[in-house]
Image (tube, rainbow, N blue to C red; front, side, top):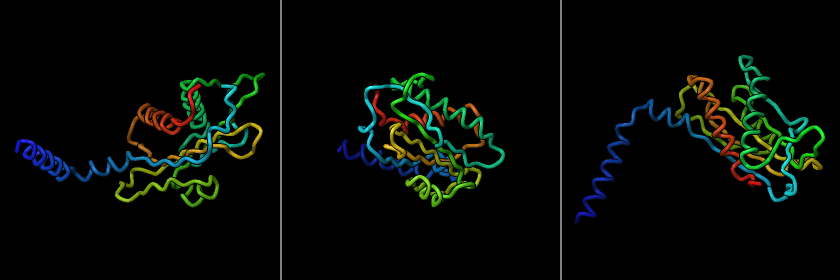
Length: 190
């Protein structure tokens, strides 16, 4: 009897909480969700070396004119370097041959549609904008790992989420770094 009463009370509490959520709470929850899709096989990367370098041609930022592309590229490379270093990799020096090339791209929905992303990257995460306030814009982040001897990526991950322009730059950078860490979680630790 006590067990049944406990479960009835818990279900009632959950329903009451769901009913008391405000529209703005629901919009904020919708705006903080992300979707991710992964393709490829990490086992084909060279496991003998821990050096990585930036892909010479695969880096792109598709955003409006208000976004400083150079700053975004610098932050993206810094955040990716940090994630890779946490996994035991290091950025290759000039005289060192990397075993992995890292390419990346970022796009805001206003500059690149899901259809265009699918055409260029071969992946689409399919994050819905339904129920999300217009103050948030959908953004996409692609990271691809290449074997230096192959023109095709051996592994790719595409994540989509919503920009939070109402947050401070530090808060946005922290969320972005958390996203990259989550995206690269499958990359083996060395």
